Length: 314
Image (cartoon, rainbow, N blue to C red; front, side, top):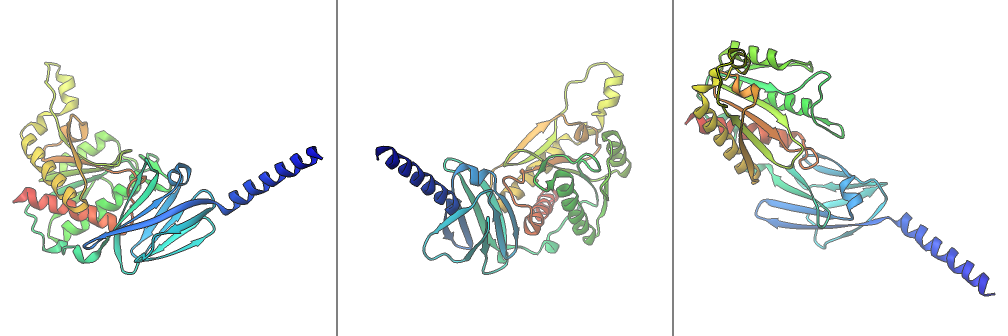
C-alpha cells in the first residue's frame, strides 16, 4: 500500500511540473512616465530575457520569447498588451520612437518610448561644410557584426544613405565609399576618400557593446622607415588632428543629447582615420542586443550626426 502511495505521489508531482511548464514562465510588466517619456519594463528570468527577439514600429513593439510565458501587469497601463503563442505585443497609443535596453540583475527588457513631438525639423539645421565622404563599413561577403537578422553592413548602409540624402538636400556634395552591398578593401576606401578631398569624413560601424563610441585619429610617433610611413599615410591627417578631435566631440555631444546616454569618445590610430586628409571620425553604434534599429532610431542617429556637424561648423 505504501509503495502504491509513493508511485501515486511521484506521478502527481510530475503532472504538476508538466502543468507548470505548460503554463509558462512569468513575465512581469510595469511602466513609469515622466513628462513625454514612457518607460516600459519587462522583467523575467534570464533565459527568457537573454534569448528574446525584439522588433518595433512606430505603433507597436513585439517581443518573441523562446518559451511559453504568463503575464502579470501593473495596473493602469497606458498601452495595450496582447499575447499570441510565444509573442508579447505592446500596442502604443501614438506614433513614437523606441529605445531598447537589455539589462541584468535582475534580468529585464527596458523600452523608452518618446513621442515624435520632441523632434526638430532637421532641414532647418545649418551646415556650412560643403563636401562629405561617408563610409558605411564592411559590405558584400563581409557582414561585420551580426545579431539575429541585423547586420553591421546593412545598418551602416542605411544610415549612410539617409545622412547623404539629408546633406544633399542642403546643397552639399556627398560621396559614399559604397552605395550597394559590395566588398571594398581598406586601401580602396582610403584612395577613394582622399580623391574626393572632403571637408568632413565619417565612417560608420557597430560594436558589441551597449555604448555609442566616437573615435578620432591618434598619430603615433614616426620612425625613419619610409615604407612604414607610406602605408600609414599619417602625414595626411597631421594638419587636421585638432579639427578631428573637435568634430568627434561635437558629434559625441549631439548623440548624448539626443539619446540621453553616455557616449564614449576615444582617440585611436585607426588606418581609415589616420590616412585621410580631412577632419575625420569613426562612429560605432551599439549592438542590436541593446538598441532596436527601427526607422525612428535610424532617423535619430542620422539627425544627431547632422546636429554634431552643425555644432562643429559653428
